[in-house]
Picture (cartoon, helix red, strand yellow):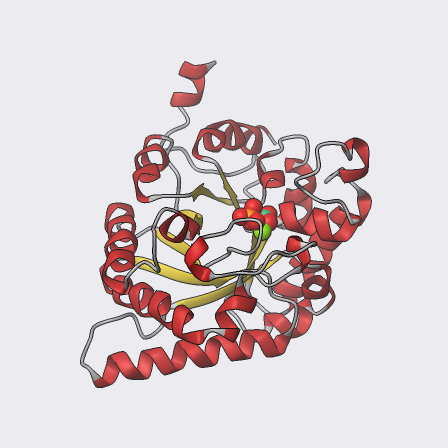
Length: 292
Ligand code: PEP
Ligand code: MG
């Protein structure tokens, strides 16, 4: 079977009826690109940038971040690399952030909330990301969005950083694509308005399941109650894809559920445009899609 899967390298991710899906990879650090290329990933749909923060003793410098983003962008060539901005909080702590203990870290001061409250931290990352965008095909993605105003605020900070770089004659991609993660019920409900603000959606089914079903994703005792196959979660995904398409933007899935071949037909019927999964899931998923 492994040899059969190897034969799928270089093959199109297309169903027998001609429907295509882009098959991207999730990565956590630049060295993961090797596995993406070895498994024929068509792009990177989620580069979790947290490693930069969790593995340092202090805020990672712009230069350090720039090198990491550029390395990934260059290795991927023309293929899209979606870099998610900082998604840490009280559960994924770095001491130097000085975050307070929280009883409900999943509902707390994290991700985009830190970035909008402490834009000086956010701006360093955005500068690094924009500078790296001159070396490949980078898109930026904001996590944990719940409202249109958060997106506008984040985009406002991005434009400020762009102006600063322009004034300093630093090269970057002026047309860098901006997307958001859809991983809160609020963002699903507001998806029609959010779609008018961004270039793409990527559904984070790990958090979307947690928040929709009120089941802590870290709690191993919830079993059947934390079922991502729940019709409530699937209906949310369907609503999100429809809202995206009504506004002419693409919509993918970057949570674990994207790799679940028991749902591949369901996602294809919804018209999902992209699935971003761990590198080892790419070829099995391509096989499932081509069988359809
Ligand atoms: C998600 O929530 O589904 C997701 C992809 O992000 P993370 O798992 O990093 O929270
Ligand atoms: Mg998430």
